[in-house]
Amino acid sequence: MDQGAYNFRDIEKKWREYWVSERTFRAHGPGDEGFDPGRPKFYMLDMFPYTSGDGLHIGHAKQYVASDVYARYKRNSGFNVLHPMGFDSFGLPAEQYAVEHNIHPQAYTEDNIQVITGQF
Image (tube, rainbow, N blue to C red; front, side):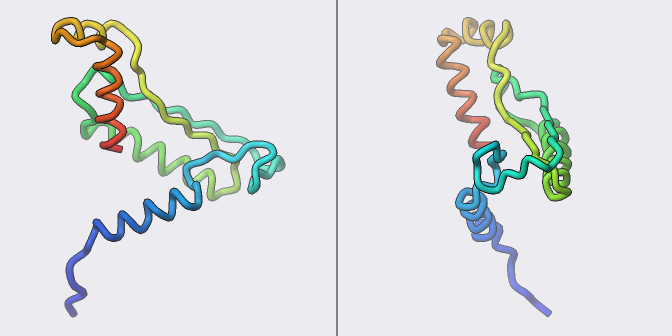
């Protein structure tokens, strides 16, 4: 039985729109609709990606997929989950790279944040 090709673009678009409209990425806080102060709290912090590289690589997937799955599991198990994401954009490696390539460190960092955000 041929079910046709898997159209990942349509499926990804559908679920991205759902996640945005339902704000599934947002941690509810006191005063927010959907916040239940009786639920236990759970905080998961990943190592933030460095902005001194060329973007994400397969090693990031190993780390972020596991923590994302576990945070979702805890959320679906009744916890108030805070799982923030950010960037490690401070330090000597980013500054050295920028200087070696004659780019201002701030511009280089902001450009790489855009690259990584697009990769997520």
